[in-house]
Structures are given as structure tokens and as C-alpha cells.
Length: 319
Image 1 (cartoon, one colour):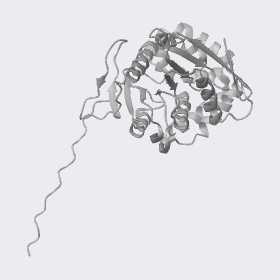
Image 2: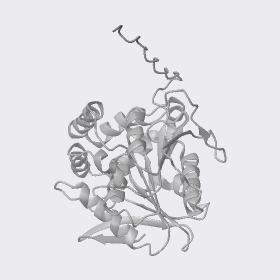
Image 3: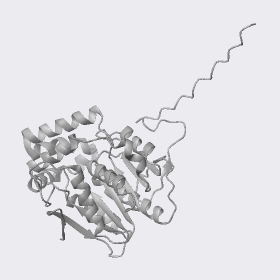
């Protein structure tokens, strides 16, 4: 297991896949750790990608500063990791808070990556998301890591997944408690709540961008993803059917397949985002479907968009 030094701090990361393959760097969500990428990572490796997964500052086995962790520190860690990859196509994918770090990186270092994949992410924090963030911080402070995880599981996954995984959820919660430090997580949450909106800067992202969102994600709902689509010039948004916030875990193989296809299209010169909206396939190997014209892609139910009322033509006044 290699270690990266970034401003005298040690970062835990893993490298898998062929040495000469194009690179995919995966950025954790707020309470994640490196091992949670394994099924997603394996899907990318199977398609010939060199995959980098790592624990951000304050997570897993990486250093855990006891004081405030600024988002710019996380961007610097990502920059240092990308520097180690050498000259090859590099794609960055981030889930939730990790998507924010990926967006910031693409804004600040636009010429160092080939493509960007924000997943369940956001460029601003509306009141609903802010109140959820405050509630999660309170849960962590008053109840500890396990209470926070107990709160997050039903927010992140479908009933079907929770039922199927019931026998391992307690074990997963215990592992999360062991590997994540409560004070470091609190510092990470403070950096989330001190978030400064990125929307005005999104137009400076010049790389192809593939925005992935779950059909039933209520933590970072579709209008937040659509804001990315409308402000990033060369972007497309895909809605993953029956997916919730943490689809990189629940639908890992499908999400990895979609990221790999995007990267392959970019490298082959086929990707033309055009700020388009797509419906993802149900299974690995399926095709994307254009979102039907005339329907509102921000709704959970297919509501036809009303055509504008025709302007009333008035007769000129008699002279």
C-alpha cells in the first residue's frame, strides 16, 4: 500500500489496474473510506483503466488533522496524486462531497485532466441540504460515528438494497466506526458547512463532464445536478434508474460501466455533451436513452412541459 506526502501529511492510497492504462482517480464522499470503492474499481480495471482510490485528509488511514480541514487542502492532495500519474489521460470521479472536490480541482487546474465525473454532487448548498448537513453534524457530535451511520444508511440506499444487505450492515457500521475518527469527521463536516458556492465558476471547466445522478436521490436532488449541466459547457447528465444517493455502492458495476464508457468516448473523440440529458440503462452493457422531449427532467414523474401561451394579437386602435 503506497503513501503520498502532501504538505507533510500522509495520504493512504491504492493503485490497481494495468500500469500503462488511462487513469481514473476516485474521490470519496464525506464519511467513506478507500475500501468502499472496490466493486466500482474492479469494474474500471476490467476495462483496462489504472485506478487510484484514496482516503482524503481526515478519512480512513490518511492523516487526520485535529483542526479545521480546508477544502483547498483536499484539492492539493488530489493535485499531488494526479502529478504521480505521469503523462496519460486522467479522469476524475467524485461522489457527493468528493464530487465537490473534483469540481474545484477542474476549476483550478483545467488543463491537467481529460474528463470529469461528478456523482450525486453539487455546486451550491440550498437551505434543505444545509439543514441536513447541520442535522448530520449534530448526530455525529451527540451520538458519535455509529449514530451518524445509522442515520445515513436509509438516506443513501433503497429498501431493496437495505433488505438484501441486512446481515452485513452492522458489520459495515462497525468497520466505519473503527476506521473513521469522530473528531476528524467533525472537522470534515465543518468544511462542508463553510462551503462557498461554485456555480459562478463552473463555466471555466473546459474538460468533458459526465454528471451522474440517481433517480431517487433526495440528499442531492436533481436540480443540483442540473445546475452543473447548465453551467458546464461540455457536459451531459445521466439519470440512473432506481438509484439513490450512494449508487457507487448500490449499483457499483453499472456506475463503473458508465464512467468507463464516458472515458472511452472522450479518448476516441466521440463525446459531445451539448448539455444533454440521458436516462441510464438498467444493466451493464445497456445503452443510454435520450430523455424524452417535451417532458420535465427535473420531476420524478413524467409531466409534460406546457407550451407557452400564444401572444394575443391586438387590433390597432382606430385613428
